[in-house]
Image (tube, rainbow, N blue to C red):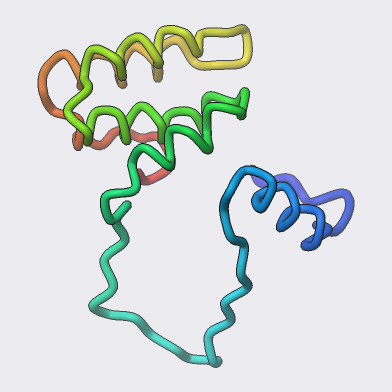
Length: 117
């Protein structure tokens, strides 16, 4: 179940936070009905940037992307250590175990029921 936002997002504050970490934060708005049928999302070789950006976050739901980025760079052992270091009362041990197991099995691109990654 999705929770309604209690207050609007301050776009300038978000953009300032991203800029302070060396990232841009531009607003892109598609025209109504715009379709991107051939678009494929990828990190385009920016995995180190993803890890550096997410390192300041504390939520596993975000940090899991750093684990994927480390694995994509061929750093499976580091990805496992990173995932293990994310254990907390607010992180799913089952999800962390699954991420670590996929890295051990050499299958970093395997999908699970974890938000459609």
